Image (cartoon, rainbow, N blue to C red):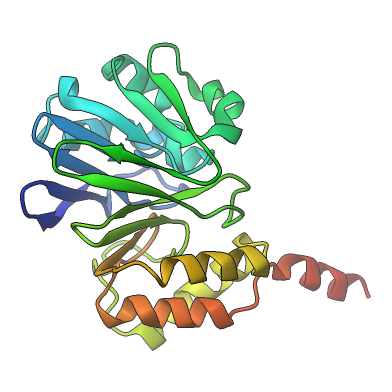
Length: 250
């Protein structure tokens, strides 16, 4: 699994992904960690199938005792089905995740880790230097869903928003936005069900100062490509699965 430091000024944002050794047939994912002195936060730490790779990578940067917090943007297995194993490796940690999904996420195993439900309107988390905001992203694509924004690093961890399905070996950052659109369109039209929710999110995120937008699948966006994505996503009609099904039954 590849490790890349995407921010390093007083504390670090580290991305883990592009794993050539992951089992066949499971979607490739990006995992993140904020290493902030004696505290570390794992963001969408991944599925059970990649736990051993993630643990090996994470412990090169933090002792398990320093992993004080875990964030799960929503309930999908590629996000957090490794929870039962993290529950054994980091039993002292707190899990920050939407309140609406607690009864479901606990099915992955959560005996010792403390579940801290995020209210619908969002909340904040202070580590040492890092002051993080949980930004509502409901229905994109989960009914309870959050992004993480770091106003100092100017990074938005956007979960499935901005995701693209790509083969191994793809670059870390978007290099040609127009070409990259081809890899995002189907994913966003099918997995994002609500134009109203999409537009609400775009309006909220446009107010943030973002240098890097880091989705859970595919490449990261930086600089002007962040605005290009927001413009593209705002204009995109989503929830097309119902429309396509109606057309096929006509």
